[in-house]
Image (cartoon, rainbow, N blue to C red; front, side, top):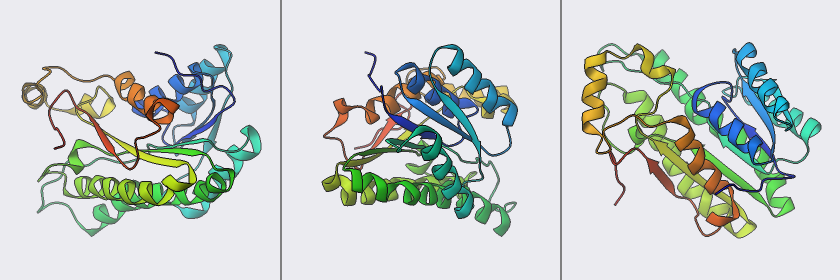
Length: 251
C-alpha cells in the first residue's frame, strides 16, 4: 500500500546505488523531497536525481563523507537549506568486508567502524535536536543480519552492525517520548553490486541457506524502510526488523 510522504524531507546516506538508491526512489515516489548523499559516485547520484526529477518529484545530491563529522554536519545543513527541515533520516552508507581473522588489520577495523558506526552517529546527532524541538522525526538505520549472528570472515563488519542494533535500541527508547522514532532494518542476502564478485558456488550455498530459496531485492528492503517511516508503524520503537527470507529470525 503506497504511503503519503508529501511535504516530508528525507536524507538518504549512500543513496546513489543499491539499497540506498531503492530507498531514495521509493520515498520520492511517495511524495518526499529527497537528499541523496554520496561520497564518490557523483555520476550515479546525479542519475538518481534526474530519474526522480523526471518523475515529477524533488531531489538533490550532496557529496559528503559521513565518516567525517564536519562533512556529516554540512550534509544535513545543505539538505535543510535546500529542502527544508529533515523529517526522515536513513543511515544507509557503509562498507563491507570479507577477510579472515589472520589477514585483516587495525586499519580495516578503524575504517569500518568510522563509516558504519561513527557515520551513523554523526548524521543522527546532526538531525536529532531539531527533530526533538519540532516534536517529530523518523530515523531508520541499516543494520545487517551480520550483526545478529557470528560472521568469522567479516569480523569488523559484523561488529559494526551489532553496534547499530544496540545504538538503535537505546536511542529509540531515549527519543520515543519526543515523537522521534528510531528503528533499524537488517537485510540478508540482497541483490546488490556486492554480490557481483561473489563466487557462484558460494552464492548458491548462501541461497540454499535461505529458507525462501532466493536472493532478496532492494525494493523489498525499501518497502520495510518506508513502513518504518510511516505513521502505520507508530508503536514500533528501537526495533531491528529482519528482511532475510527467513535466514535469520529474532526471538
